[in-house]
Image 1 (cartoon, one colour):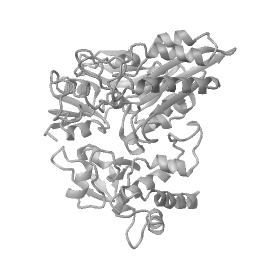
Image 2: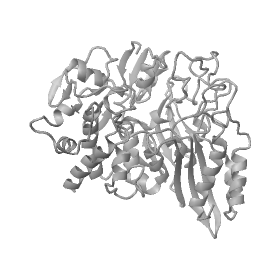
Image 3: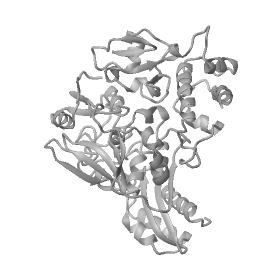
Image 4: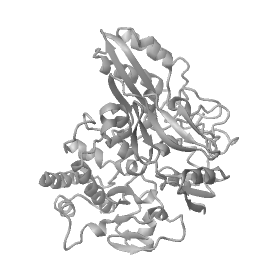
Length: 327
Length: 165
């Protein structure tokens, strides 16, 4: 690990000011950042410990719920209101990592976790995300974990998390404090970026931005399902995941909020799928049409070609489970 | 200051020191093991303020005022904890390298079950979980055992959990 200067921020403006400086990074749970610092993928000059900030509460926010950025994954998944009203979020959090990691990982930090692309985490390999202009080792290399949607010729990394996929389906928002004292709310669906020509930028955060909370809209009725497909049954990243809130009325879809993990550089959300489903009677041909929309522009890179049929089948399985249709 | 098994210690000068390295090198408690050093194996699991964490993925300087319990604070050869005794009885190890982490993890895990924390295999996250073998396996998935003593580890934990409930 490279040497760094360690500071503690006691107030939000202190945190935004300190992380505005070049080479400074905020640390909360640290489960991803310290790992990357050991690998010298991340080499902050200054590490700003924000754990003393009063951002560790879950509180009523209008008709919904506000989750402080420092609320641990464990505390969010254990919260009675989240377990009752947003079970999708509890399930997605519990599908990720291990209990030891969830006990440290925070809501804000989890949103900012970096890709697990093997080229990104190995400093001896080319990676446009880690070192812009150095090339992408994955495009013609080992690409089993990698994206099939929204890729660019610069980067095919995936966003690895589960929690954000549920938050995208729930249409939650990220509240961000800026170094100039301003505050803004960004929908989770717009928080992460596609790689394009700037794969080094995972999300819309600017220097000095500090996530303060995630806000959930009012609870909605319907079945909430998080289906995660991975290579072992616990403690593995998603090859494909589907977060779904499905509400039926008179045998037809009344609501079909869907988001997908493991397929792209961000939790994938495609409003056209919801528009297709709502008002229709569930059937396998309809689910196939939904998958056609999802995968219209999908591109495999060899080792991850399997994700295209896998995403189709996982979507169908979730919709069957939600509606009682026999596959 | 940081408290380890009831004794106070000064925090390290170098902020790079992981809690794991601090415990082993500075405090001299080598029961906590360094396996992968990347949060993947769980050999370094300790209990901080009642919560189990990977001590390799946290900096010692971030634990000013915290209370850490390591395997040395859980029991001794003469006075083992119920879990330590059950691991011996059920042969819950072969080489023993992962065992301190397994026992710290399981010690906290039994409290988590008692507190009603759900897991990925809990049918309805809104309900209180019951401690099936499937729940034990899922909740212990952050502790790897390269010798493959898993079935005996589950048996040891099941016995202690059964005696508690």
